[in-house]
Length: 446
Ligand code: MN
Image (cartoon, rainbow, N blue to C red; front, side, top):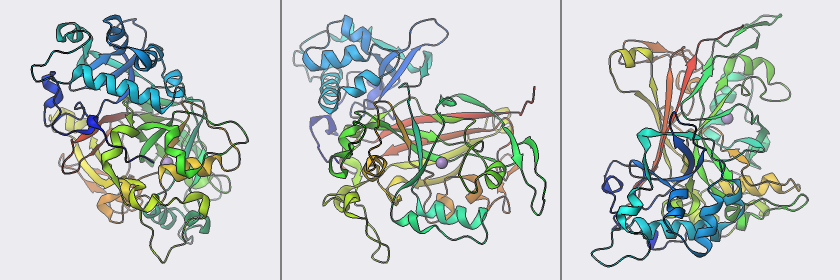
């Protein structure tokens, strides 16, 4: 894990691009998250870009302008592709070289001469985010969704299985299921309400129909940068060197379908209809200043040695603030901002990113560049910190009241779920993940 701080984390660094210095921007010079984009409504090829202020840095254009040399140039060339798998596979030195080169190009120089292309030439390499559309940043080979918030797990067990208790394995390993890649989309995704089987309470014969308890799950997506060979394992001590970065992830969930189908083999149609990712991946380097202590109560089992390092308790966690808001059709009609439903932090998670990667590979499973891990729903100990509606509304028993006069137990058609995330710490810049929006469309059988 990395507490590696360098000049790119300097809070006093300013860009010559004014919007990057705006207090409100999620994308100051210290962030530099990666994604793939093109100008919306064009037939341009998707290609690698980096968010800065309200612009996208078109890496291909910066190459043309002669902005890069050495390892940074090789890394930027890998980003000309419509997905970033090749760039991910180059490893942490290449990721860092490109980050440092971009920082130097876009930093205000206090009157000193800069080397390489001038500001006029670099301005030609910027595309307004308002004019851009995004693709999935990687061709995702495999997707694994974890279940690593103990508060979420305890809430869910109580709500879905009234007689159940937390399974004992939860406190010994980061548990997960293997998810579905084909239905993963990027923010702005429109999600059709799924059909599936559900069994009415007390019923004996299930029926098939549109989901009546449609929910979201607030998660982080973890993009694997460098893979490992089959039959080898990634040690927890170096696990984060294999991780490129994190994005926001919405694991849409059909609770009525889930309750009926999940015993004994776990999520299937309740989860496989859609998963939505934010377009920007915030790198592990950018997240370095926001590391936090990772603690485990002395009443709980301590992790087995393969899931523990000496550094883990000092800074194994990452303090990422997360928020979910809801925008209904009435919000849009009345021009009201989305209503905040909950707020929590990733630093309360029971298992860390490094532990998830180490456990995933301990049996010899090979991860590949561009593979995606979901953190599992991120909930804190209080109701206001719940990362899913099923927890917020107590499985629908206490509906949420919205300022539009509406109530919600679960999602309605036309609802837009908006997830945001950011990191802040005194003495460092505030960096963000941008928005992860997804909209529910009505069910359709044919
Ligand atoms: Mn999930």
